Image (cartoon, helix red, strand yellow):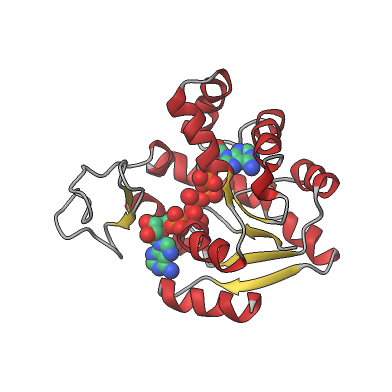
Length: 209
Ligand code: AP5
Protein backbone atom coordinates (compact mmCIF):
# COMPACT_ATOMS: atom_id res chain seq x y z
CA UNK A 1 0.00 0.00 0.00
CA UNK A 2 1.85 3.14 -1.16
CA UNK A 3 1.86 5.76 1.60
CA UNK A 4 4.37 8.28 0.36
CA UNK A 5 5.41 11.76 1.47
CA UNK A 6 7.08 14.44 -0.66
CA UNK A 7 9.23 16.49 1.70
CA UNK A 8 11.17 19.56 0.66
CA UNK A 9 11.48 23.30 1.04
CA UNK A 10 9.02 25.72 -0.56
CA UNK A 11 9.67 25.92 -4.29
CA UNK A 12 11.65 22.68 -4.47
CA UNK A 13 9.22 21.26 -7.05
CA UNK A 14 6.93 19.02 -4.98
CA UNK A 15 3.75 20.32 -6.63
CA UNK A 16 5.29 20.09 -10.10
CA UNK A 17 6.08 16.39 -9.68
CA UNK A 18 3.18 15.28 -7.49
CA UNK A 19 0.44 14.67 -10.07
CA UNK A 20 2.37 12.18 -12.18
CA UNK A 21 3.85 10.47 -9.11
CA UNK A 22 0.38 10.02 -7.58
CA UNK A 23 -0.96 8.81 -10.93
CA UNK A 24 1.82 6.28 -11.38
CA UNK A 25 1.35 4.96 -7.83
CA UNK A 26 -2.44 4.84 -8.36
CA UNK A 27 -3.18 6.92 -5.25
CA UNK A 28 -4.73 10.36 -4.59
CA UNK A 29 -2.51 13.44 -4.29
CA UNK A 30 -3.16 15.26 -1.02
CA UNK A 31 -1.62 18.72 -0.70
CA UNK A 32 -2.34 20.44 2.61
CA UNK A 33 -1.50 23.78 0.93
CA UNK A 34 -4.21 23.11 -1.72
CA UNK A 35 -6.73 21.95 0.91
CA UNK A 36 -6.08 25.10 2.97
CA UNK A 37 -6.27 27.42 -0.07
CA UNK A 38 -9.61 25.82 -1.01
CA UNK A 39 -10.91 26.45 2.52
CA UNK A 40 -9.77 30.10 2.27
CA UNK A 41 -11.55 30.50 -1.11
CA UNK A 42 -14.73 28.94 0.26
CA UNK A 43 -14.57 31.27 3.30
CA UNK A 44 -15.05 28.47 5.84
CA UNK A 45 -14.27 29.18 9.51
CA UNK A 46 -11.11 27.12 9.23
CA UNK A 47 -10.12 28.92 6.03
CA UNK A 48 -10.57 32.32 7.63
CA UNK A 49 -8.37 31.29 10.56
CA UNK A 50 -5.70 29.78 8.31
CA UNK A 51 -5.54 32.73 5.91
CA UNK A 52 -3.51 35.12 8.05
CA UNK A 53 -0.87 32.48 8.84
CA UNK A 54 -0.53 31.58 5.16
CA UNK A 55 -0.24 35.19 3.98
CA UNK A 56 2.62 35.74 6.39
CA UNK A 57 4.36 32.51 5.39
CA UNK A 58 3.93 30.94 8.82
CA UNK A 59 2.68 27.41 9.53
CA UNK A 60 -1.04 27.08 10.12
CA UNK A 61 -1.63 25.74 13.68
CA UNK A 62 -1.38 21.96 13.91
CA UNK A 63 -4.96 21.41 15.16
CA UNK A 64 -6.41 23.13 12.05
CA UNK A 65 -4.17 21.24 9.61
CA UNK A 66 -4.76 17.91 11.35
CA UNK A 67 -8.52 18.48 11.21
CA UNK A 68 -8.54 19.21 7.49
CA UNK A 69 -6.15 16.39 6.61
CA UNK A 70 -7.87 13.89 8.92
CA UNK A 71 -11.16 14.53 7.08
CA UNK A 72 -9.51 13.98 3.73
CA UNK A 73 -7.66 10.81 4.81
CA UNK A 74 -10.90 9.27 6.03
CA UNK A 75 -12.36 9.35 2.50
CA UNK A 76 -12.63 5.98 0.74
CA UNK A 77 -10.11 6.84 -2.02
CA UNK A 78 -7.32 6.99 0.62
CA UNK A 79 -7.92 3.43 1.85
CA UNK A 80 -5.29 1.93 -0.44
CA UNK A 81 -2.64 4.62 -0.04
CA UNK A 82 -1.94 8.29 -0.74
CA UNK A 83 0.72 10.77 -1.72
CA UNK A 84 1.18 13.60 0.78
CA UNK A 85 2.63 16.91 -0.41
CA UNK A 86 3.38 19.57 2.23
CA UNK A 87 2.55 17.37 5.22
CA UNK A 88 4.00 16.71 7.76
CA UNK A 89 5.82 19.97 8.44
CA UNK A 90 6.95 19.48 12.03
CA UNK A 91 7.43 16.72 14.56
CA UNK A 92 3.93 17.01 16.07
CA UNK A 93 2.42 16.41 12.61
CA UNK A 94 4.84 13.54 11.83
CA UNK A 95 3.93 11.78 15.06
CA UNK A 96 0.22 12.30 14.44
CA UNK A 97 0.62 10.82 10.97
CA UNK A 98 2.49 7.82 12.41
CA UNK A 99 -0.55 7.08 14.55
CA UNK A 100 -2.99 7.38 11.61
CA UNK A 101 -0.98 5.58 8.91
CA UNK A 102 2.77 4.90 9.07
CA UNK A 103 4.62 6.15 6.01
CA UNK A 104 6.57 3.75 3.84
CA UNK A 105 8.62 6.25 1.79
CA UNK A 106 9.63 9.86 2.17
CA UNK A 107 11.10 11.44 -0.97
CA UNK A 108 13.25 14.32 0.19
CA UNK A 109 13.72 17.06 -2.46
CA UNK A 110 17.24 18.41 -2.07
CA UNK A 111 18.17 21.76 -3.59
CA UNK A 112 20.35 24.69 -2.49
CA UNK A 113 18.32 27.45 -0.87
CA UNK A 114 19.82 30.03 -3.25
CA UNK A 115 17.73 28.56 -6.13
CA UNK A 116 14.42 28.73 -4.28
CA UNK A 117 13.64 32.42 -3.94
CA UNK A 118 13.65 32.93 -7.71
CA UNK A 119 11.37 29.92 -8.21
CA UNK A 120 8.91 31.19 -5.60
CA UNK A 121 8.73 34.84 -6.60
CA UNK A 122 8.56 33.86 -10.29
CA UNK A 123 5.68 31.38 -9.92
CA UNK A 124 2.34 32.27 -11.54
CA UNK A 125 -0.66 29.99 -11.84
CA UNK A 126 -3.88 29.79 -13.77
CA UNK A 127 -6.96 30.21 -11.56
CA UNK A 128 -9.06 28.29 -14.12
CA UNK A 129 -7.08 25.16 -15.02
CA UNK A 130 -4.36 25.21 -12.31
CA UNK A 131 -1.40 25.17 -14.72
CA UNK A 132 1.72 26.44 -12.96
CA UNK A 133 4.19 28.71 -14.79
CA UNK A 134 7.37 30.47 -13.86
CA UNK A 135 8.29 33.79 -15.40
CA UNK A 136 11.97 32.78 -15.42
CA UNK A 137 11.94 29.09 -16.32
CA UNK A 138 8.50 28.32 -17.76
CA UNK A 139 6.91 31.55 -19.02
CA UNK A 140 3.49 31.53 -20.72
CA UNK A 141 3.46 32.32 -24.46
CA UNK A 142 1.64 35.61 -23.79
CA UNK A 143 2.80 37.42 -20.64
CA UNK A 144 0.43 36.96 -17.67
CA UNK A 145 -2.05 34.78 -19.58
CA UNK A 146 -2.59 31.03 -19.49
CA UNK A 147 -1.58 29.13 -22.64
CA UNK A 148 -4.59 26.80 -22.26
CA UNK A 149 -7.50 29.16 -21.65
CA UNK A 150 -6.19 32.75 -21.76
CA UNK A 151 -7.12 33.42 -18.09
CA UNK A 152 -5.08 36.07 -16.28
CA UNK A 153 -2.42 34.35 -14.19
CA UNK A 154 -2.27 34.90 -10.43
CA UNK A 155 0.66 35.44 -8.11
CA UNK A 156 0.17 33.58 -4.80
CA UNK A 157 -0.06 35.99 -1.85
CA UNK A 158 2.72 34.08 -0.05
CA UNK A 159 5.07 34.11 -3.06
CA UNK A 160 6.04 37.76 -2.57
CA UNK A 161 9.59 38.12 -1.36
CA UNK A 162 8.87 38.86 2.32
CA UNK A 163 6.54 35.88 2.86
CA UNK A 164 8.73 33.62 0.70
CA UNK A 165 11.76 34.39 2.90
CA UNK A 166 9.72 33.65 6.03
CA UNK A 167 8.61 30.30 4.54
CA UNK A 168 12.22 29.32 3.85
CA UNK A 169 13.19 30.19 7.41
CA UNK A 170 10.21 28.26 8.83
CA UNK A 171 11.23 25.26 6.72
CA UNK A 172 14.79 25.37 8.10
CA UNK A 173 13.62 25.67 11.68
CA UNK A 174 10.54 23.42 11.81
CA UNK A 175 10.48 21.03 8.86
CA UNK A 176 14.13 20.21 8.10
CA UNK A 177 14.48 18.29 11.43
CA UNK A 178 12.06 15.72 9.96
CA UNK A 179 14.86 14.53 7.69
CA UNK A 180 16.59 13.00 10.73
CA UNK A 181 13.21 11.76 12.07
CA UNK A 182 12.54 9.75 8.88
CA UNK A 183 16.17 8.73 8.33
CA UNK A 184 15.95 7.11 11.77
CA UNK A 185 12.95 5.09 10.51
CA UNK A 186 14.87 4.06 7.35
CA UNK A 187 12.23 5.46 4.97
CA UNK A 188 14.09 8.52 3.67
CA UNK A 189 15.01 8.65 -0.06
CA UNK A 190 16.95 11.78 -1.10
CA UNK A 191 16.11 13.18 -4.55
CA UNK A 192 18.39 15.69 -6.27
CA UNK A 193 15.80 18.40 -7.13
CA UNK A 194 18.13 20.58 -9.21
CA UNK A 195 17.94 20.73 -13.01
CA UNK A 196 14.94 20.61 -15.31
CA UNK A 197 11.62 19.03 -14.20
CA UNK A 198 12.18 16.06 -16.56
CA UNK A 199 15.55 15.33 -14.99
CA UNK A 200 14.04 15.44 -11.50
CA UNK A 201 11.19 13.16 -12.67
CA UNK A 202 13.71 10.62 -13.99
CA UNK A 203 15.45 10.53 -10.59
CA UNK A 204 12.13 10.01 -8.80
CA UNK A 205 11.20 7.24 -11.22
CA UNK A 206 14.38 5.38 -10.28
CA UNK A 207 13.32 5.46 -6.62
CA UNK A 208 9.61 4.59 -6.94
CA UNK A 209 10.18 2.02 -9.68
P1 AP5 B 1 2.21 24.77 0.26
O1 AP5 B 1 1.20 25.09 -0.75
O2 AP5 B 1 2.41 23.37 0.70
O3 AP5 B 1 3.55 25.42 -0.24
P2 AP5 B 1 5.08 24.94 -0.06
O4 AP5 B 1 5.35 23.67 0.65
O5 AP5 B 1 5.68 26.12 0.56
O6 AP5 B 1 5.45 24.53 -1.44
P3 AP5 B 1 5.28 25.31 -2.75
O7 AP5 B 1 3.92 25.04 -3.32
O8 AP5 B 1 5.65 26.75 -2.57
O9 AP5 B 1 6.45 24.71 -3.61
P4 AP5 B 1 6.60 23.34 -4.39
O10 AP5 B 1 7.72 22.56 -3.77
O11 AP5 B 1 5.28 22.63 -4.52
O12 AP5 B 1 7.11 23.90 -5.76
P5 AP5 B 1 6.37 23.97 -7.18
O13 AP5 B 1 6.38 22.62 -7.80
O14 AP5 B 1 5.06 24.68 -7.11
O15 AP5 B 1 1.94 25.61 1.61
C1 AP5 B 1 1.57 26.96 1.59
C2 AP5 B 1 1.26 27.42 3.01
O16 AP5 B 1 0.16 26.65 3.55
C3 AP5 B 1 2.37 27.25 4.03
O17 AP5 B 1 3.31 28.31 4.03
C4 AP5 B 1 1.58 27.19 5.35
O18 AP5 B 1 1.15 28.48 5.73
C5 AP5 B 1 0.35 26.40 4.93
N1 AP5 B 1 0.53 24.94 5.12
C6 AP5 B 1 0.54 23.99 4.15
N2 AP5 B 1 0.73 22.78 4.68
C7 AP5 B 1 0.85 22.97 6.03
C8 AP5 B 1 1.08 22.11 7.12
N3 AP5 B 1 1.26 20.77 6.94
N4 AP5 B 1 1.16 22.64 8.37
C9 AP5 B 1 0.99 23.96 8.57
N5 AP5 B 1 0.79 24.85 7.57
C10 AP5 B 1 0.71 24.35 6.31
O19 AP5 B 1 7.42 24.89 -7.97
C11 AP5 B 1 7.64 26.24 -7.61
C12 AP5 B 1 8.01 27.04 -8.88
O20 AP5 B 1 9.24 26.50 -9.42
C13 AP5 B 1 6.97 26.93 -10.02
O21 AP5 B 1 6.93 28.16 -10.71
C14 AP5 B 1 7.53 25.83 -10.94
O22 AP5 B 1 7.15 26.02 -12.28
C15 AP5 B 1 9.04 26.01 -10.75
N6 AP5 B 1 9.76 24.73 -10.85
C16 AP5 B 1 9.40 23.54 -10.32
N7 AP5 B 1 10.32 22.59 -10.60
C17 AP5 B 1 11.29 23.22 -11.34
C18 AP5 B 1 12.52 22.78 -11.92
N8 AP5 B 1 12.93 21.49 -11.81
N9 AP5 B 1 13.28 23.68 -12.58
C19 AP5 B 1 12.88 24.98 -12.68
N10 AP5 B 1 11.71 25.46 -12.17
C20 AP5 B 1 10.93 24.59 -11.49
